[in-house]
Amino acid sequence: MGEAIAVAPEAMFGWAGQAAMIGWGILIFLPRRWPQILFIPRYLIPFGLSLLYAGLAFSHFFTIEGGGYNSLDQVRILLSKEEMLLAGWVHYLAFDLFIGGWIAVEADKVGLNRVFQAPILIATFMFGPVGLALFLAMRAGHFRKREASA
Image (cartoon, rainbow, N blue to C red; front, side, top):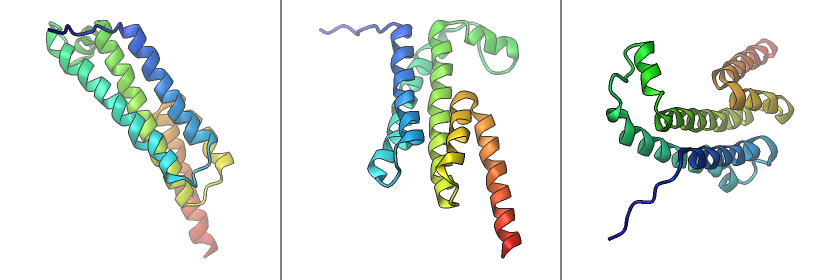
C-alpha cells in the first residue's frame, strides 16, 4: 500500500508563508470591487492554513511530555518541538490574515480610504493585535467624528 509522504517542516513553513503573502497582497493592493477575489484572503487561505495547523497540532501536541498551556514553561516545552513551533506560526498566519480581511471589509463599510487602510493592514500583517488596535481606535474616532458633525 501507499506510504505517507513526509514533508519537512521548513517546506511547510515556506508554503504557509507564501500563501499568507498572496492573501496580504490581495488585501493591500488589489481592488475590492470583485467579491470573488476578496474571498481568497478572507476565507480560502485562512481555511487552508487552519487545516495545516490542525494537522500539525493534533499529530504532535499529545506527544510532547510536559508540554501544555498551563504555564510559560509548559508552552516553552510544547514549542520546543519543531512541528509545534511551526503550528504556532501557522496559527498566527491564519488568524492575522482572517482579521486583516475583516478589517478591510469593515474599513470599506465606514468609508476609510485605502491610503489609511494600507498601514493598518501592514501593521496587522507584521504585528497582528497592533493593527487590530489601530483599526479599532481609528474606527471609534471615525464614528465619533461622524456623530459630532451630524
